[in-house]
Every structure is written in structure tokens, then in C-alpha cells.
Length: 368
Ligand code: SF4
Ligand code: SF4
Image (cartoon, rainbow, N blue to C red; front, side, top):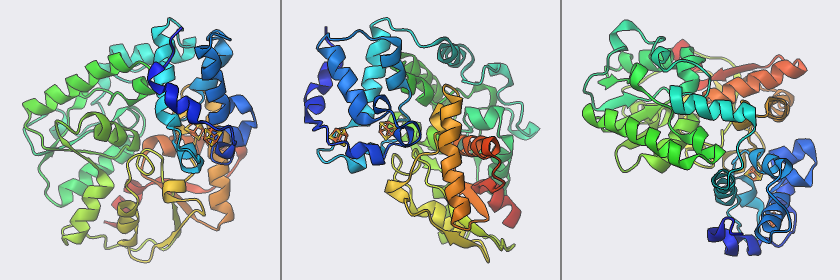
């Protein structure tokens, strides 16, 4: 039986040292070998050798990977665990191992309604101010993403107001916008994601869009990986950082708090955007910027990618990040991703932590 044959060599490189344990947020909270890179690779090997079938527990082992890429940093031979597990998830689907029902509902919702929130596609742009409901030709387009369109509207509205304040010529797709494709790819449904990616590209082409700007770290990762042939992808903090340097964007009101910035994996380790969010926060008068001991490339995932599929696990991981921020004396935990925001808030609520958790755009709009 062939299973991820393109990764046979990489699988052999795993020397079973276990260094991935200290890096893996899922292993840290579960302590289970089937929830860490080494254990997952061992299961994949057993499937390749036809020693085991793709059972529900094998599937769950792979689906509980956050694709956070943290284990790559501590892995001596540099096994590309992230890519290997994505390929294994896709191979499971191809071999007829369907997703568990709760996750399959999300997959179907993305395919038919272009979002994983089980909401209607025709209501995607309902949050937009009337003047932005209809797309128009423009050099910049804001890709709001599913989380902002259906749940975290405040972030999208803040971005619109900040960009209006500097007179940028931008548009949005509103109801025509579709999921970026990243959630489908994470589930292994790569072919279905490609259709969605192409539909977004077609709409942008009609409007002559050159830059696609997003406040969502997950969408930003997808834009970089799957859309760079059609547009120039930017996370909003990159655009803001540039505008600050050019003297076009200023924050005049003080924010006298100790703020700790959380490097979400999709903007940080995957997207390699580390300095810009910090530059933006440093531009706010009287703000004190703090750091997690494990930050930038070494940051520990908040668990957000599992919030829809394994919410208890996701919230447990999130609570760890919030507890750490609190113990360091931070007054505000700031993120640049609506999924990190949602999950960290859920995790904090679950264990009764009261730390103020904010998206960076919510701080910026208060200090503009
Ligand atoms: S990518 Fe993240 S969640 Fe997956 S095995 Fe590596 S460290 Fe663990
Ligand atoms: S750190 Fe790398 S080589 Fe070591 S067990 Fe984990 S995946 Fe295998």
C-alpha cells in the first residue's frame, strides 16, 4: 500500500530522539506519544508497512496536529513534519477515510457556503458599511477572511477606519469573498481548496487588484503560499509599519499599558513577519512592549487551529499562553489574528483568567 510515498526519505530521517516533545503544544498538554511528531511519524510508518490500518485513532493522531511547525525548530535532522502531516491527511481522504462528522460538517460548509462557521455565503458581507458592500476597481483589496466576516467584525471595521484615515484606495469583495482555502488544506482537502483559491483570484483580477491586505494571520499564510502568483500579499501590520515609516500613519493618543505581543504561528513562524507588529506597537505613545521568553520563531502556538475540531484541547493550550502572559506581569495580550484572539479568549474564560486580550487593530483604533 502506498501512503505519502513522496515523503519516504524524510520519514526515515526521524531518529526517534524525542526532541519534538518539548516543542509540541499538543504533547505538552496531553503527554501522549500519539500527539507528538515522533509518535505521528511512527504511526505513518506502520501504515506504510501495512502493519496497521488507518483507524479512527490513527486519524485522530494526525488531525490533532496544529500544523504549527514548532517541531521543525527542535528536530536535529530537520524532518519537515508539517508538510509530511499535511500530505498524510490528504492521503487519508484519498484512501476513503472520511473525516469525523463534526469536521466533515465544517468541510461541507466551506465547500458550499465558503466558510467554516456553518453560516450563509450571502451574509458574508453583512458587517460592511454600505459604501463597501459593492466591490470596485482598486489597487488594494482587504481580504477580511471568515473569522472577521462572521464573528470578529470589530477587527475589520477598525482596519477600514485606519485605512480611510490615510486615504488609501481600497475595496473588499463582501459577499463574493470566499474562504482563503487554508482550513480545507489543513483537513487534507487540497483539491477542493484549489477551486476556492481560483475563484478568489478571478474576482481580484476583475478589479485590477495588486495588493491583498488581510488582518487574519491564517489568511496571510494562505495568501503567501497559494496566491503570490496573482497578487502581492500583505498582513495589515506590514502595511501599517510601512505607512508609519513614511510618516503617513501616526498614533497620537497614549496607551499606558504593559502589552505583550503573541507571535501567532501563521504570521510568525510560517509568515516570517516578526518585526512589523512590534514596530507598529512601538509607535503608540507610552505603550510598554513586553516579550514571551519563547517568541518569534520559537513562539508556542495558542491552539487556535483546533478550536473548531477539538475545542477542549484548543482551549487547554490557549489557557497556557494566557497564564504565562499574566505571570509575566502583562496587562494586555495582543495578537494579530482573529483565530488566536477567539481561542485565547475562550481558553482564558474556561479557566477563569481575566487578562485583557486584544487584536492589534483594536488598540490602534483607540490610539489613532
Ligand atoms: S506541527 Fe506543531 S502540533 Fe504538529 S507535531 Fe509539530 S509541534 Fe506538534
Ligand atoms: S525531533 Fe525530529 S528526529 Fe527527533 S523524534 Fe522528533 S521528528 Fe524524529
